[in-house]
Structure formats: structure tokens, C-alpha cells
Length: 348
Ligand code: KG4
Ligand code: ZN
Image (cartoon, rainbow, N blue to C red; front, side):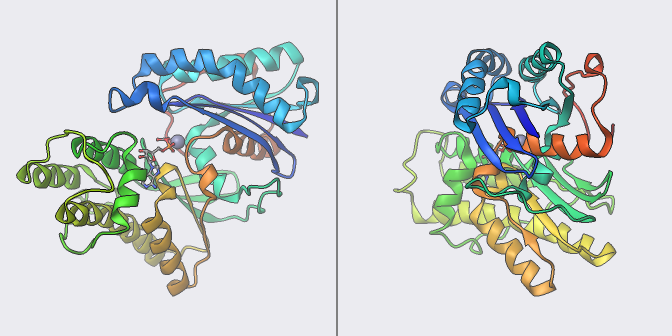
């Protein structure tokens, strides 16, 4: 079985080819980062237009790199949501057209479900790690923070963010610090040489006893700290920062990691985590990976960290999640596959 995956939910145009064992035969990711960097964030109209331009090239590139032809494809999996509606429509429509023209089944994939299972994927053409249920998943990205329990055929949400996503907080703070976009990678790099315990920030809580995340309080506190130091968004050089600012950024990152760890620990206490899979763009974060791995060691919980090449948006994870769903329940009616800007995990 050859699966063609298509991802266009946000600012990466990606097409991938995987086989039935979850071997990633190709995973072309065409980033629009430069188009959006000018604005310090993703501009929906710019994204949709860029997907339209990039998708045919990515499709050809993915097939060629996999040594496959369109005739070899047995299943099409395309992201249907959540995401920017104009952006989603480009990839999903292309997937539907391909499936219709070739008489293939199409699986509309939830982008977050794609992230959830991405920790199983391996680089270098190796087959995916087998999925064993139940497991817990922590998806942390530019748009989401979701902690869920994954059962065979069901996803049970346990906590999500009430306001900002962690990646969004990284991006907004980096922008205000004059460090460019996206913010996560640059703050990650700076924090590595700072003291993350120098400026303790409070862990945001929802206030009603739920486990939901909240990052807007932290973001506001951090913006205030930047303002107090006269940091106003004028471009700064990451490798040449005031040492106090380095510690401040390290402390900000440390607070995000501590908040994520806090909820994981709380869920483990409440229902026991058998296995934890980390995913999403923020899963590339060095401190988060180290902290979760250490927590897992300490509590005897295997923690699966995704290969960095599968953390940010990519179509290999969409193809893989689509294949798993197809095996479980087949493909739906092609005509019913619609793009949706909102699509909470665990809902149909
Ligand atoms: O999953 P993703 O590509 O897009 C969404 O679905 O949102 O995640 C992108 C996010 C951005 O906010 C980016 O700043 C963040 O992931 N990110 C990181 C790191 N690399 C990317 N955040 C923290 N540390 C990193 N190393
Ligand atoms: Zn994503």
C-alpha cells in the first residue's frame, strides 16, 4: 500500500509518500517562512496563495523522491482541519481531485491526530514503531496544546490550552524581543546558554480546578519584563544578547516546560500513563525533550520523542495517521470531505 499525504493547514506546503509499514519514502516540506517573516506571523491569504503555487511542485517532488508514480498510490490522506480555511482548501481539494480522478479512497485527516501519531515515524526509510494502545499524547505547537489519552479507536481529551498555544507564546515573545519569526528555535538556542531558574514565573492555571493550560499570563508577564528593560522589538542579534536577557528568555522557556510537565505529572497521578508520545512543533524544544525524558525515567514511563524532522508540520504524519484511520474504519464519502477551521481532537 502506497499512501500519498497532503498537508496545507498553515504555513508549510507538504506532500509525502509512505508505505504500508509507515516507511517514509519521501516527505517534501516547502516552507513559506520567508513570506510571513515580514509580518511576524502567518497571514492567511498569503498562505493560501503560496500553497496554490507550491503544491504542484511538492507533489511532483515527493513522487519523484519516493521513486513512485501516481498510478502506484492506493490511498490519499489530506489534512481537512483544524487550520486556516483557505489554506486547508488548497490541499484537501487537490487530494479530493486526485482521489476522484484515480478512483482512490480519500481520508480527511485531523491535523492534530497527525501530530499525535508522528512520534512513531522514523527517518531514514525505517518502518514506523508499532502503535500500542492506550497511550497518552502531548501535542504542543504554534496553534495547540493538547494532552489526550489515545485508545484504539478513540481519543479522549484531558487538557488543552484556554488561550495561547506554547509555540504562539514563543513566537510572540521572540517578535517583541526583536528575534524574528518563528520564535521557538531561536529562544531554544538562546536558552541553552542561560539560567532558566533566575527569574521564576508562575505556572498558569485555569482557575476552575481543571487541568487546562494557560500561557497568556506568562506571555503578559514576560512582555512586561521586556518592556521594563527597554526591549521594544528592534532587531537583536541572538548570539550577542545582554546576559540578563538571555537568562530572562531561558526562564520564560523553563516556565513553559514546567507547565507542560506539571499537567503530565498530574494526569499520571490520576490515571497512570503507560506510554507518552510528544509531538508538534514545540516538541523540537531541547529543554522540553530533556525534561520529559528525565520525568519518564524517574517514573518508569516510556516517553517517545519524535524525530525532529517530524515535529513541525509535515505530510508524512498526515499519511501515517490517515493510513491508521483507514485501516480502522475505511474511507468515507469523498463528497462529504470538507475543510474545517475548527476540529477538536476526539470529535468526528
Ligand atoms: O506544529 P507546527 O509546525 O505548526 C502548528 O501546527 O502550529 O509548530 C510550529 C511552532 C512555532 O510556534 C515554532 O515557534 C515552534 O513550533 N517551535 C519551537 C521549536 N521549534 C519550533 N518551539 C520551541 N522550541 C523549538 N525548538
Ligand atoms: Zn501542526
